[in-house]
Length: 353
Image (cartoon, rainbow, N blue to C red; front, side, top):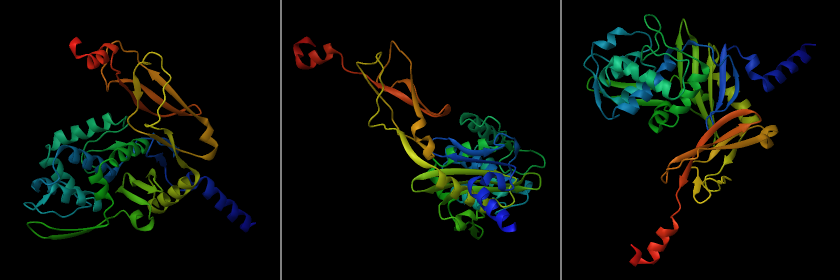
């Protein structure tokens, strides 16, 4: 009997990993399309601890040069917990601070970055504006570090996956978050930092991520992985075995899903009579992760806007991709104007100019 129970448990772990592992919320997202491949309670708002620092990193990277020298002030005395132990008056480049922020989850690094780039209040405003811009509709940032005593940051597994998907497009962020060891010499002392993200060591396809923990939030983990040009993002919240669980989720979903090109920018066809004298095109290929049963269930719907006045390069619609009835994503459709007949005649007959 025990042997039968063991076999059944193994089968359940293999086919339904999200039902077995002890996290309260999780999501597996296809990085290429943004498609949700698996989830549970993905829209439940929770405290997010130091996964906040993904947004802190992105706001800094998008608004300030990484070679800038920033010097710590009294702001470093306002935080506690995970630190890089930068002294008041100690100076580092923004790049160095971002490494400390991500590898060591330095709360003091977060404060130095916020105070000395945009200014604290402006920095927090920019975090929330960026969240709104990328579709994080259930997220609120009140500080740049994630400590939740006086001010609290809330988000969801889905929103954090959106944030990580956006962050993976930033090469510097991915370079930093995928670093295992970093050394630097400041104007005060030498530092050696090791990445707290153990997934980088136990799973060879891991490319980056950020851990978080407070007594109130529990263990939070946002990560990314790439295997055979297939890219996934995993978020688990209140997950005591986060590194092993992420590895198991990646292995399960990489095995079940494959990457397919649904729209080809070089062979894009749009049967649209309104712009029949012009050329319609898309700028990027569209990929989506599918399991075998879904391959023949792809539907692409072209939505065209009939504009009376337009120029080459204008957006005149979008191609929307569905799997069965599930909306996956879309890409803009652009127009390239054809030369008019009179223009062609003028080229051939200069005396008409």
